[in-house]
Length: 116
Image 1 (cartoon, one colour):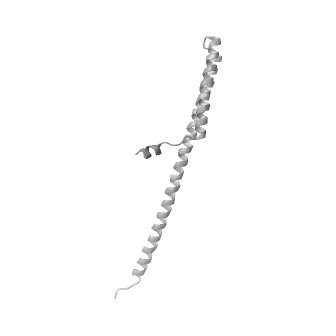
Image 2 (image 1 turned 60 degrees about the vertical axis):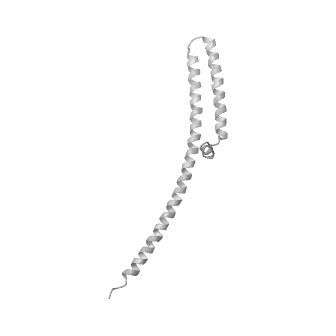
Image 3 (image 1 turned 120 degrees about the vertical axis):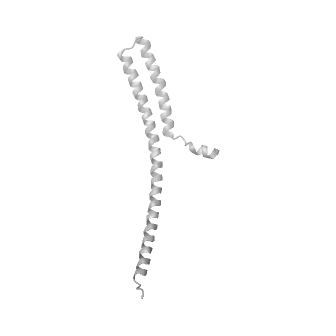
């Protein structure tokens, strides 16, 4: 049971670790600079809106990059499964073709004999 649960979780890749570090760094530094701009102006200014929008845009790009990496890994596993299924279908088709050939040969053998 425990081995089945361990199989559900996959290892974290280097790219995901790097995205995590960059994301946390972006959150901390972005929040620091936005707080710094707010302390200077003490009101919502255009500079503050630009800083917030840029920070949120950067966070969205980091999230999309992480999602893209996960989708790529999922698609690679689907492609591997699809290749295996295609190989199995090819084997089944070959077996069916050989059975069909044997049936045709047996029908030719019984059809050429005439009853007295």
